[in-house]
Image (tube, rainbow, N blue to C red):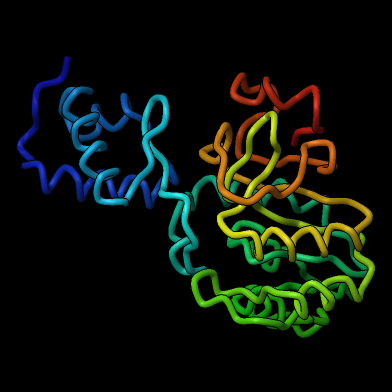
Length: 252
């Protein structure tokens, strides 16, 4: 067992928070090695962080607290996992027609893959709208409505109506949590409703999410796995962590 390192409790918790931002989750054993402390010490630190509302403990470690977070906050989390996921999506982007992207920072990474195309890209996220607008060959559409400052998105009945005004080849979305029984879920009902409006107008729905979100549940139901055409994570589809999902949804 590793011995307690030179960092004090406050320093360890700061390092754990940095690991969470870097990787999108904290793996207990890996964190113990990185901090050169015992697993029991990491458990105590995670309990303190959970009490402060900064993490949510799960089996084997911790994940971010399931709460509305700004685009900037989400963009800084799990950068390596997101880059793998976005690269997997390259072959799924059509060259014409319309696609929809929700307020996800992961799905928003598609914007850098658009290249030369005649695509129309609709989103309820102002940051994702700006990313898509940077490509002069892409027609970017911002779905308006009630501004949700906590997630940098637009929600409400006007946003849902606008989201349903086009027909999309594919809808790329993420989720706050994914569970093999209930499917995807969100931190607010309003976010879930806009995503459902996009999906109803789409030929295919592609759920993109880092593996840290697997086996978790948030507050508002999103989609059953049967409603999802493809689940894309940073994992190899043969990874055992996906065993509970592979008989219900296609994996990439």
